[in-house]
Length: 418
Ligand SMILES: [Zn+2]
Image (cartoon, rainbow, N blue to C red):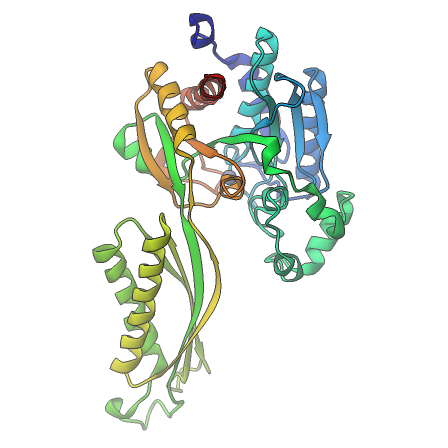
């Protein structure tokens, strides 16, 4: 690549002004943002994004899933499009950086490339995906675009069907048209996303840029231990069939096996409900919400089997019945090796220290990875805090990430033309 292209950088003042302006939309007293998908504040943020796109002289477009985009025609007429993006929605009372950073950086990259007037082997599109965070469905816009939106997701959305329908209509979207946003994979050159890490790995490694290797797969089960309700005063301890004991033993053993045999994975027991739930009745039933995440599909299968095995052991130990109900699963999404290389070389060219890491959190990139080469750039989250108003990334790290996004785009262009 030429020196002129190697030395290309984002305009950090404009980038900061845009980031701050966006953070004020739905901004909360404690410095966070409240922009649940398709809420009033989120729709305002989208209007703001549209205005920036038009003011910059980029082409604005919105698809039937409500994904908002700015397009820069930088390639030959029939060239595919490289998508750069993230999401403008937030969790309730979330932080300023999650999602917003990636969208503002994508817009900035398009503007810089537009200003230099260089032509690329692909067009560029800065995209804001609908409902990444799951207020309604989760990864709604990106899975629709990837053609992976399931009927079940819409029939039983996690935010409830009433909310989904109400929000779609408020945003002038219709459920039946959502799948029409599907893109032909041949029309896409790839997908790049800049995002905050939302964990402590980069900070601990004193690294400035994380090159994401894969986005963790996630699975969930309902585990039910069945015992017998008895008088808590008159039943001797040795005669009880206490479902709470199964739940307790299982909880501890899930943690033990994850740490000892699956150090790259995480597991969570997020709820234990005991029935009939009284001071003086031995619990007859314990209902557990179990979630597990793994960076690779073989490992995910082994982890799942190990967890079910532990549930069996806990049931046997306390002479309980056991029911296991599989709820759902998303396979791990490996990031494309050439995109990872482009990110790594881009960061090295900027003298930034990189590490490879997998993402425990879900992202739009996992939808895109199913249909085109996808990659993610992580920048450090101070203290690992996220989904909170305290979420914070040093501004220099945001600038570094945006410059890596710019340079990785140029590297991919170089790969494609050579
Ligand atoms: Zn996010």
